[in-house]
Image 1 (cartoon, each protein chain N blue to C red):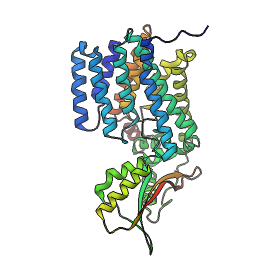
Image 2 (spheres, chains in turn cyan, brown; image 1 turned 90 degrees about the vertical axis):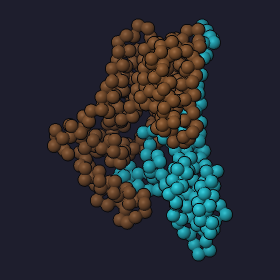
Image 3 (tube, each protein chain N blue to C red; image 1 turned 120 degrees about the horizontal axis):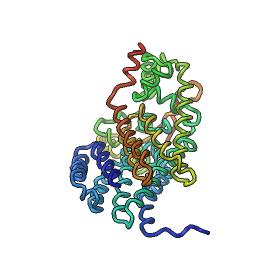
Length: 137
Length: 276
């Protein structure tokens, strides 16, 4: 015999767990879709992987006719840099490029890159792996 | 249910948000809830607590930790339960599923989505790089403080793109791999077992022992006391009426987690063994 349908108070009890599951599934989708840090976003990926903010880096490169030049990031953009590091969506990369350019108006085209660190299983040698990249004129 | 509500309020009071303007209102509300039991049984009060727990998630996005989200879900579950026909029964269901969901997704990340968990390199790197695990690396992994310093220096040089970079003076201690493997197996197994016990009714008789064991072991080193307390409070809230011993176990685990934090027992052991 199938179990009886849940009563209204039993359905109430499912609301918070359903929200937890929806958020966690959304977090996995965001990690898959645009590289959201597994440690952030409410998906319970903490202490599961070394792919966290401490091992991610944000780089801004100026693209000139003479070649590429790494741009030093001003300290006042630290919070925004950390935000981009955790949530490397293109809109955030664009916002970061605009903020860098606002502090150095002479800059040409910019490329913003977010990298994570992977460690080799045999001797823990680290290597950088690109998470997200976008160019802005 | 009364005890569970009090424990929730205590956890929310003692492990509030980082910023004072988020922390102070929550602490005032929880303090009042602890002083006035009628308030703690009022769904409208818990609606306020839920809002106070939820808005920092938006304000601090994306920097909140996982247990910040769980805190908001727990407060919401209490609010909805207090408005239900059977508040204790409703809270039991919510708390059980919140714990089960938490460990289901934690296990999914560890056992399916993270290759560096499965090959053991997550714990090898974490033992060397995360100061919260350094005492364990020295006590059980054969690491010396010089090794930890060498790893930090080599990794710092690598991440900054400086010479000489990797590996510098770093040599992985021989005892680290077995320790990392043991931690990987234990953590993966107990978290998956908790998820199964809380989500699959046929394994229900194991759920309290597993969750209390998790609290008593994991938080001895992982000093995320707010997460530990919240899990123990949820564990207590999902206890059946007759599970008195389990309730005592959850409360004892809350005190034990605090003891782990307040007593520098690993450092005392390191000193006693002459490893400092």
